[in-house]
Image (tube, rainbow, N blue to C red):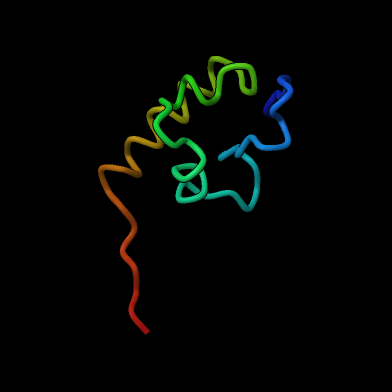
Length: 67
């Protein structure tokens, strides 16, 4: 499971946690890179995974269904 170490843990949006999606994560990132945002909260392997998976999300945004 993800390691949460730093003092900003309460504000950290962890995309690996249940119920968190990349839209939430994108908002939390602001102008920081995934690595900058996640260092101190997640392991190197988790960060590498998120970097790749998040890029796929950005390259292929979800389709919003109109009601």
